[in-house]
Length: 117
Length: 111
Picture 1: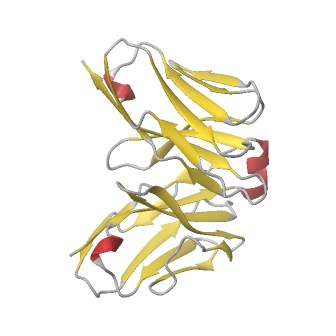
Picture 2 (picture 1 turned 120 degrees about the horizontal axis):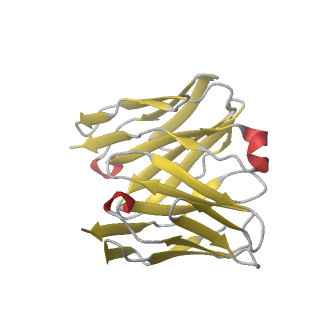
């Protein structure tokens, strides 16, 4: 059963520390999304990649957030330094790219729950 | 940029009752997706609509997209406690395949 895998599932860290979240997209999916979910803002798109190239990271605070895809099986989202306002659930999602035109959808991981104290 | 508004924000119904959740877009929808999320879990895909007037059903859930492709509704018939969760609509902007989401509707079903 193919799925998007995210690690860690839960993370508690102190303000100022670096946080790295990892995502393994479904094999063969060429588009990867990073979303952040909070009670106040709902689900926000932070960045997304196609064929490992960043297409749009306009939703991401540039000064402390960075997203990369070192290879087709790994996407990372890094926060440095972390702040309490970064506390949220971070979701990774992937989709087959072109095939989504025909009605397929994107698949979400279970999220990384981040708490910055 | 495209925005999605969902209503109501939250909903409490008695088990067995029908309910409807709405999603309205500021622009024409190229693809409209409905997801369900349980607390502490990821989003589970429910249905996707593309054509004006399209309607799809899965078990007791029916989703519709209006002819103008700017509004969608999700209807649950004879609700059950298992239907409880957050329902989110997502829209494909058509040009980039970027998926944005509405603010969500929190549904509670009382036994």
